[in-house]
Length: 382
Image 1 (cartoon, rainbow, N blue to C red):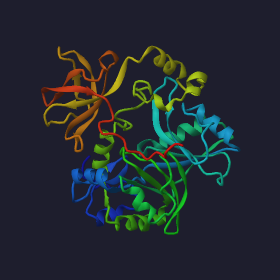
Image 2: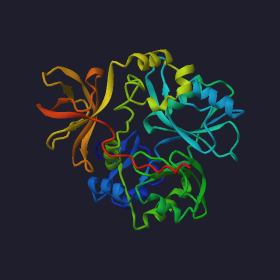
Image 3: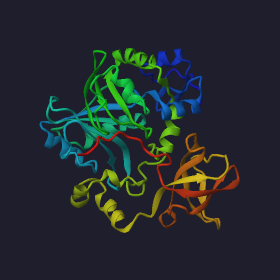
């Protein structure tokens, strides 16, 4: 990322607030976005791990799939993605992927079936900012005529993340504390209507707030006025998701990676594995049965030097095994960490390797992910 002075970058509705708060703005996915605020990336990272942080994620794509009934819309999406949308209950959220006919990942996305008072046949999508136009075009080309795609361009999106996020949000939106992880529903924030998901991209408990763009600044200012909340930029968002072992599209996953290679099999439930019927199913199901040629792994490096994307991963004899796809310093881990792809036989936790960093071969160890335990809120079962 570099400083942005380009006039052709888009801005979110909170751009002026970011600058007021002293953010350093950089180009990201076609937008001018805050990479950090004056306190710095490590302080912002620790803020989210210890209290609560507010992210502007309004650059993400929000859209609705609209069909005549739930079965029609769900089956249409199941023809493009391997999730169980037919069985998705009202107020539930699923992580999934749009796939190519070879099983590659066009994009990863969140799919929500809204509450029962929404029109039947509606599914809500949140897709990556840099892929949204590609996604919308792909959906329009492959969905049946009975199901339409409607981008929600007048919506903004905030993410409130951290162990104190629920306590803070409940002061303005009573009744939300009992929501479980990956659930959704309508809510009001000081009288402002919003759609609410209990999910996020940090490994911490938290919420994503979808609301009209002309109301987002009032909500953001109200949250930032709370003593537990600070603004968080893209730099800490990246280090948080890396510690949580979460993929970033265009780095850890893309059209050349399958869900099996990327260790995302949790997103392909039993019914879909048995029935198939999604793009690339034969290739993906064969990889499930026989194993993929390579796998995404976590890596911890000795010393303090971080490995960056593209760095070569080798075994101790110098044989090339793969490449780093994401890397950096993990503030909570207290050292450099990375993710990358290696030959499947070498994807064994505890295996010693080396990573080439600035011409040196640095010792590294394959490590189970996440690097930092997830702390999502799950309702007690009875």
